[in-house]
Length: 385
Ligand SMILES: *Cc1c(COP(=O)(O)O)cnc(C)c1O
Image (cartoon, rainbow, N blue to C red; front, side):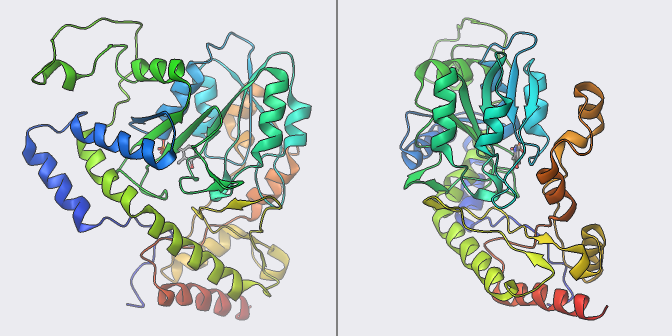
């Protein structure tokens, strides 16, 4: 249907997932319980890691991973301006000062040299973001972290299914945070998870996600449990429900296939748009990796296109095609200007990208015809000038 609105992203929920949700609703147990347990086991197997802890969101995961650092006033956490604002917000919420390092113009990922310059005696951690699903060059980053005694918290919200040097993101390193928001590579409605091989850290996060109670409700109200529990410290209410895990179990099972289709579509965009002067297309990184293609986000060259990115997005909307803006450079939001003194010009690469980037429609159920419609609409739009 040519006139139907084509969104930039759309979750693809199988009938198996829908049936599992119905089963869950009818089972008498809908919050954190046996399905969350099964989902966590499945995630642990998928990532081949020690601990996979589900949460209500990736934001919750970032918050708890950062709280586990026990930051003192003045402590600094280095991250990228090319991210969703939750990455910076959670650093502030955990009591830290977000210190930004500019990104690489080509990969849009945090630049290790820039990170090196940003390290001070107050730095405690680095939060790299695997932008659009392209893994950050982690080897030099972890080397730097090791040399300075810093923890690395990977914001892997875009990166489930991505690989670095032949290993899955989530299978190695300190700690990774994944998002299961409906726009991401797989979804549980809302939701997220944290992966780590550090048992102490996992225990801390496990307590923090549920009031600081040492056993979750299923243990207490189930057949075998006792109703008594202890409070280790005051915690949050960041647990995932079984209703969400019911979706997640089947999303995880079809993830490989979903990423294959995302990759096909991304490469197809690249083939079709490669000679267009209006676009700077996403590039390959110069280290072995598998891109998870959460986003296909080229930069619009305003001179060749004859319009600014914002106008482009509006024109596409008029043609019933959705696009996304990922992201406006984070340091230029009012709160961060006011509280941390950031201003325009501080991170020129991030600002250059921020002014030009646009996410074109990309989701597993998108057909070649859908994609042709996007390409055709753009061709007409640019030609009509
Ligand atoms: C989506 C996203 C988050 C937040 O994920 P939620 O699950 O919605 O909390 C954090 N960081 C990045 C880079 C994201 O894209």
